[in-house]
Amino acid sequence: EGQHEQHFGSRASRFRTPTKPLPPMEFRWRRVLVAVFAASADAVRVAPPTPLASRHCVASEADMISYSLMTQRATEFNWAVNPNYHVQDSGVKNASWEGTKTVGGCWDLKLYNTNKKLSSLLYQHVHDGRCVLAVSGYHGSENGVLKTFMEAMQPAENWVMCDNQVHAPVVIQFRRHSLLANWSDISQFLGGEKSTCSDIVVAGDSMGGSIAELMVGCGTLGQMNMLQPKILPSFNIKAVYSFGAFAVSTKPLRNASAENGCINGKRFFHSGDKIAQWTKGLGMVHPAMDALRLYEGEAGNTYDSLRCTSQDTSHTDMDVDIPFTAGGISAAQREITRKTQLSMGGSVNVLTAHAMPHYVKQLRGISDNGKVSLYSRIDYASLLKNGEYSTLIRDI
Image (cartoon, rainbow, N blue to C red; front, top):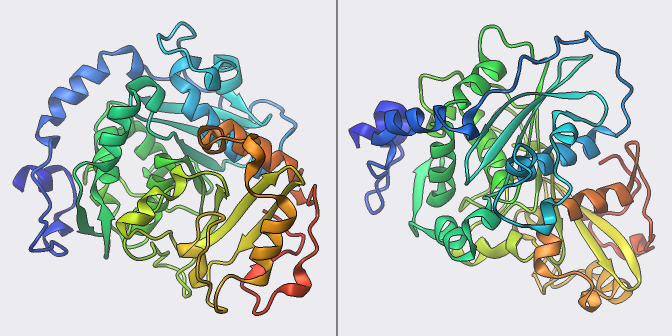
């Protein structure tokens, strides 16, 4: 217990559950971990970045697309820095250092933190100083299917923290990540006295998306030190964008600084992405934030919007029979199912639906420099009963 509280927040004792106390953890090995990773190629710092606003850039991508691309770069990062990396994964075949160090025309890579399990990249806009922290999912293709699922599922317990009960394996993975050599630099860049970030967005894929959501849930309570060493500065997160994130708390994570509790940003999930909904069976629910559910099928592609203030948003994952607050499956849900042929027709498998490049492709399909247009418009607005869904053209 003392070893845990030496590096992470002492608030652990306040929210400890009698049946599942916070364990002493592996973090007693912090000095060993830092020494090992500081000496490894994985932990080499980025070369001194181009000074802010010292170069001209023309944005070629909408912000939302840039956020998704930065997240994709985080998932591919270990291959970008080492093209001969031993794992052959078709999903990262186009990874490159040139495509990683600058994204969307105006976002420059400042720092990174990585090992075989997670990667986080810190980007900053060259003109206005906005910062984006992009967090990868667990690097399953580097560790194998069995280890990936074991790391995501064990220990099979919830920890009481950040005014919630949280899926312990995700907390463990990020705490390990925060003990690598470069995380302290990232934390200082985001929240230190010399920070040049005008505001901060956190984006993440899969487990990285879950981590991003958890960072807001803890950070707005002043408890970022439950996730990273307490000696590091906290930082204010303006918005979160998650892609295929699975739920990690027994009640919706909230933005404690907002009156309605809504987290700014969006949770994106594909209707065929079963990995994004696997913790539902563990009693986990999604955060209080807007969500965009993406569909594709033989009849075309579309999406529907789920509002933060709807209870359905925290409980909805995909195209299965879910009880909606209006009573039973909504007419809109039935209409989507019928017209878009959500059986997928074998065209999109589970792994493809969960892959970050597929999310980027889907978002590009519904976005034109930030202006949304349905590329297979389904007119079911007249079927909506109580406004739980929005089919209006709106910014994402």
